[in-house]
Image 1: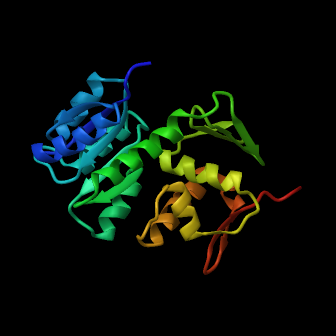
Image 2: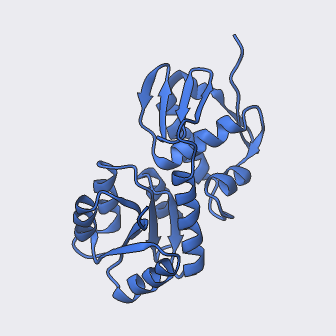
Length: 227
């Protein structure tokens, strides 16, 4: 099996080199792009890219637009880098289907750890693992969901959230616990991040969205009522 390819997108060559050097030490193959247009073109030319690290503030096409373009084509995991710490930017990133959101300055070692965590979740799964509960069916390997027999399009993070709910069915889960497990790191952002994802997930699940119960003042519980 060949090296896993990661696309690093940043208009600062020093930042690209810094991230690239740390990724290469972990034996990843790294492709580079200096702006959003290059990122989209490089992604289209290399179908085997496994993950994208995408800066927000760039010339020609910024990270938000590049993310939108790529999301119309693929559910590939995307880590967003930004110099801003405004929670509105963070929520926008999650609305667009961003999987991780890291503010500059950041620790390259932490970035690499998050890259590895995402790739573990997307690569090292059982090929035939199917989870079924109520009228929902999750194919863990393919990252696909069927509700009442019909396919439903979920973002990477929405799928991970649903998977976590299903695996912990009947358990009261605090927002902190959900974020720490689904996002795979200690998260210090606003609780609206998880609430935004739950709202979108419920909407996409239709009637089955009622399986996700709100526990006021704490978090959520996934419960399928017996008929």
